[in-house]
Length: 77
Image 1 (tube, rainbow, N blue to C red):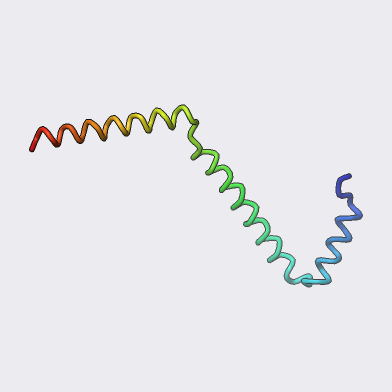
Image 2: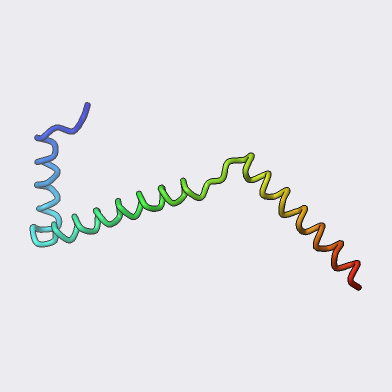
């Protein structure tokens, strides 16, 4: 149940009647930019996701550093 050539032509005719032939390039460019922006956002989000085990290790290291830093400052005073 995909979209065939006939359905695409009907959609194109309706779009041309609504927006006019002059605005079709603008609509196509805007749609292309929106799709590429969406793809970039999805790829960036995938790169920023940290596995849970790695996240737990990083948080433990940060807590350890914070505790060592607090002890060192207390000894200096």
